[in-house]
Length: 111
Length: 114
Image (cartoon, rainbow over all chains, first blue to last red; front, side, top):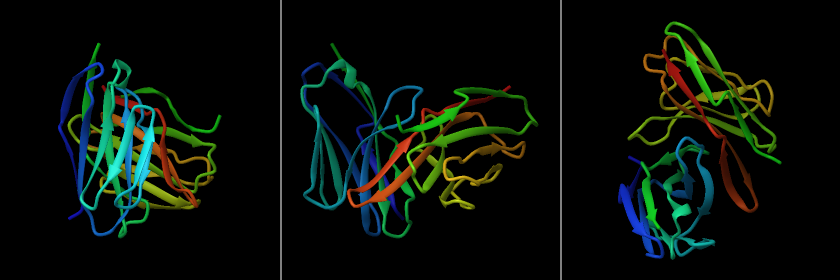
């Protein structure tokens, strides 16, 4: 069964304390892995799509990497405004344009 | 600015009433989706449409209905048959291009049954 697991469920960091969020997946052929940021009461905001193992993408303090089993979202020197829930989803080869979602990691960055 | 607009942001409904949530996009995307988000659960797919006048049931379609008469619009009706309709509803659209696949969300509608 296709599955996406995100860890940790919650993470609290001090401002400037770098860390990584994990998204592990089991799918029958990966067509894409998506990262989103969601603020309370709002819709998810698209961050990245990764397609193949070894691929990396960066946006400001965020860097996403992909292996054959998992993806990491690295947050470098986070600021309080990076506090949000980060969602991971995968698109498998068997279901065109249907995403399988993880439960998210809730990140809090203290000043 | 291009984007996805959901309305209303908050909606209250009495038990036994049908209610329709609006979703409009001006991104020229072919595919559109409706998700439901509940605390402690991942996003669950209700319905999706890959082309005008065609749509498919997602994982939790019971008690919901949709239409796709225009490319820009994908309204969701929550019927009285939906046993637990109070939730945060999200509409999304996606496009597949030479640059890859991108999917974008609206800001959501919070439905409360009173």
